[in-house]
Length: 146
Image (cartoon, rainbow, N blue to C red; front, side, top):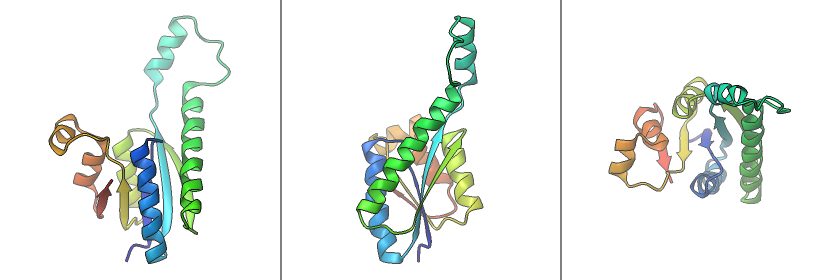
């Protein structure tokens, strides 16, 4: 039924709970799990640092954010394997979070997206434009919000 399950994570407890739920489903359907972490590019912030004289950093902000996203993916993969998943892949992307999730799902024939909520109520999440609400409203495949 679900051959490929996409689990976008940000390191929050809700997103890691999504990994646990998706792992159970992956075992049930013999699915591949793809754990995705997305970091946002902050070029304006980098420019602010350089204008303030903070230019002697060893890494760019994007490199730092990318490294952190990789750590989050590794944590998600560890949880997936510990809870019994056998086919787990990790992916890191940069850009707008909801857009990257939707693009990845579409271009990789994802059958199900399991995404953590931000803990907001349904109405306030919609009004504030939460990532999980955007993904659930625009995805072409089923979305399970945890």
